[in-house]
Length: 473
Ligand code: UDP
Image (cartoon, rainbow, N blue to C red; front, top):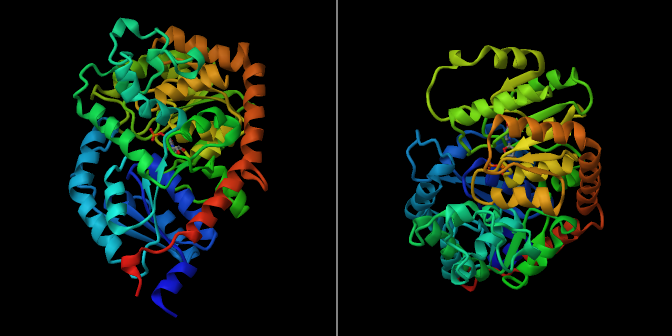
């Protein structure tokens, strides 16, 4: 059989995620679903991430004959913390160091690559795909509402909405989401004053590149995001909304999937949860990239203890800035935590959120965390840090009404009030809303559901993509 025919019979997708916990986790879910559908997958991972997911890597390559990893450097020194404030450095070093290697890997693939799926933030992928004559699908693993905010930046600048003064954060943004969005709800970079700031330039560049792809993949579902997805069609007429991916993969596997976690999960928290009453625990996490100050740590901590709620807190190493010693922790916090709290460094989050003892989630509103909470039917208190998180918090609080948006405030009195509101005063309202949305999320990924149909269409489209002329024979 000619090489070209073999390749057409077995499409080969190269997936290139932003090498951070959130994007890698969710791209691995997509990659596994493609493998399940018989598509050959090469997953390009940074050395740094690959070293930290040995179990998931072994699981995937053992289970699927057509799944392989290839690794390349991200260009940052090993001891770089790769936290949220390093994103710009990471992107720059990937452009300089990883991009040329990405080209080499693509061209030397033993089986010709027939389609590229890259993180939407990799503007260089459009150039690489064009040079190789390959179709490119961008997969932006942030929320569609967050991406919409990002794509709107050039228009917002032109309309004089951005930049704005710090005192104007509560002004409603004209022309967006029926008056729901205030300036404080725009993606975090909109607060930058200097329009020549490298982050602003990067975002404008991304906004120009997204429409160059043959399609856009989103980790969301129609019931949640129909209005924003239909707006998105004006930028790219070919959209695949295939999420929530973690629930989608689980449905297709009819089993639990690998966690793909880059930190070791402390499962002792599950035993602790077993001993707590139903819906009594608020779970707290700021994800894999955000860093809080010592002052914020104590405000949240006091708020938790003063609320009287039970709490499980995932406090990732490196997630609190400063180096003051822990022996300064006030006695009332230590006692309150001993009575009603449990603190670990990293939890199996999907399992935690699904646990019957968990009644709410105090979250930084990362998109994976938001979707995981939605699938588990757990209301949220949103305390966003950066990127799309500000937008997600607003959507959770005002558009979907699945919780409360605490953004821009970290005061023990407010924290206590919000926890009481979510876990006591309006508990039934929020649980009902969350339960209804969870049902819709599950039906979207079930047989005949919108995400399931979009994924089947994605598979058909990938199978139809021809290999590039310069690779034939
Ligand atoms: N996560 C986890 N254990 C924790 C905290 C977070 O497994 O203790 C996972 C969580 O399930 C989610 C990811 O880390 O899938 C965080 O991604 P998200 O998009 O929410 O935020 P980011 O870390 O990218 O800011």
